[in-house]
Image (cartoon, rainbow, N blue to C red; front, side):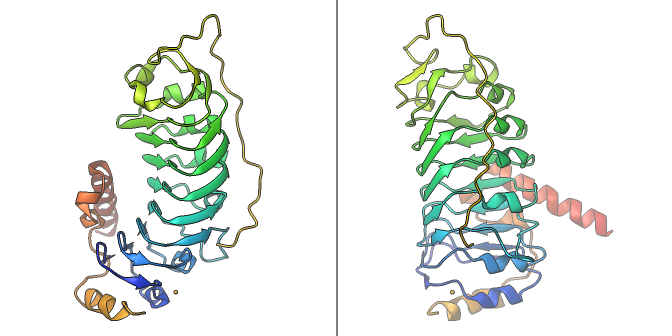
Amino acid sequence: MIDVSHNRLQEELPQLLSNYLMLEAIVVSDNQLHDSFPSWLGSLPFFKVLMLRNNGFYGVIGVPEKDLDFSNLLVLDLSSNSFTGVPTYYNAIQDVFSFIDLSDNRFEGEISGLFGSLKALYSLNFSNNMLTGCIPSSLGYLTKLESLDLSRNNLSCHIPQQLKQLGFHSSFNVSYNNLTGPIPQENQFNVFDISSFDGNPELCSDPLPKKCGNLQSSPSPFEEDHKHSNSILKKDWISILAGYISGLVVGVVLADIAMKRTPEWLVEMLSKRRKARRGQRT
């Protein structure tokens, strides 16, 4: 693991990192890096965690080239950067994702229904982007999902009734969109407060004061994203990085990653996966 978060690192990520074949995690959050998406990290065979939060990363994230597919990636945090384009890159990635945070960027277009195939997903955050279209009803298949944040976008249509089957033990937020119609009234939807739905004038039913009258709740149509993105998915600080690398052991327990900045469930999940892997070796 390489963790150089909360520093003043600038310019680009050095591609020499792709030479560390046993590398499992890179955490460079809260720096001043300015670079495009480091797709070259996708060649690392054991790479599981990429956290780029709060930097100056930019540009579109296209479909990866062959052998650069991040096939074992569990955690992806790209929040608070300047990424753009349509977030459809993930149709080329395995379904082992557990945590995706793409909030506070400039992503646009529709949310692909393919996100519903990421069955191991615990948390999905698309907040504060420029997304349009409907919330895919396929998200109802994400039975392990504990947190879903789609707030501050331009989403429309109904809230899919299929989302009622999800647990949402942590949070659900669709505030400040253009959603319409009734809010689902069963299961976890009964405990969300008004702040989860604020800023959608055409939403109705509890917990909002606006009632739906005789309007019947009906499942929204299954939304599949058929668009194909044509998007295409780097030194002052290298000396600093070298100092960190010399003191780090490749392949340390991933649960050590920024515990104060990572949800407890995520730390526990990574620790369990690590123990399971060790058990298979013995």
